[in-house]
Length: 127
Image (cartoon, rainbow, N blue to C red; front, side, top):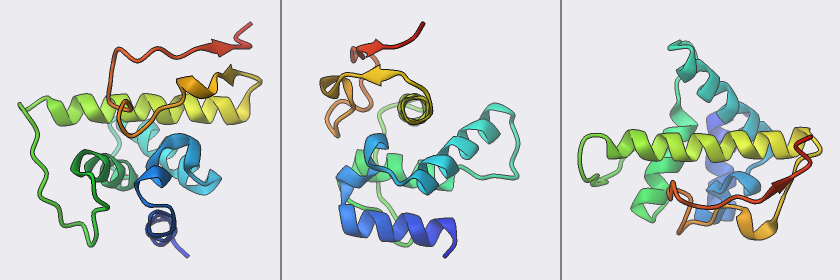
């Protein structure tokens, strides 16, 4: 099964909540981290397909199927701001799974606050 098949199966089973970083499978999280790294290096070898599908689905409030969506953004920078917010949440989740960092349950993102840049995150274990 390729990564997009796994991604589509995951969101069919879990719905929008499955797109929250803490609910992603290890494989999907790893793929998203690779996509973020590729974007940071301005490398088009690993397109940000799962990241964009997740962001557009959350913004739309519905799972995007077959890559077709009608999503409205206010202003030209809103998509990039949401991309940045989601990417940071994915990176924090990657750190949470691979290091002794502890993040309080009430600091984990929700569908309502995942794009909120003013959201407080309580972490411990960052020695």
